[in-house]
Image 1 (cartoon, rainbow, N blue to C red):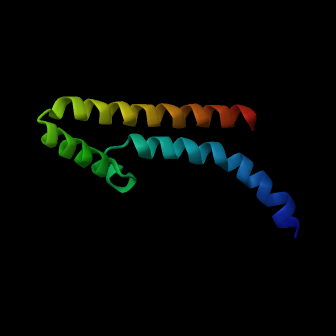
Image 2 (cartoon, rainbow, N blue to C red):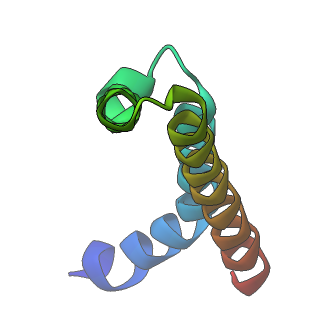
Image 3 (cartoon, rainbow, N blue to C red):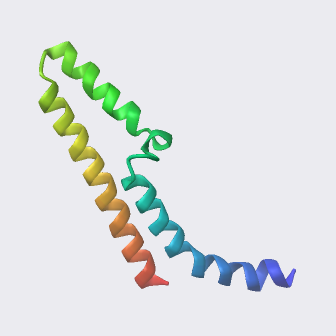
Length: 84
C-alpha cells in the first residue's frame, strides 16, 4: 500500500519527462519510424500523389504533418518538465 500511494507517484513524476523525451527521439528516428506509422503515412502520400499525378505536394504535406507532430510532442515534453 505504501508503494502504491507514495513511491509509485514519485517514480512516475520523475520518469515521465524522460519517457516523453525518448518518445520524441523515437518519433524522429526514421529507422524506428516503421513501428510508429511513418511508412503508412508515406505510403498514403504516394497513393494520393499517384491518384492526382502530383507526388511532391502530397509528400510535402506528409512532411509537414510529421514536423507538426514532432513539434507538438516536444512542446508537451517541455511543458511537462516545467510542471513537474
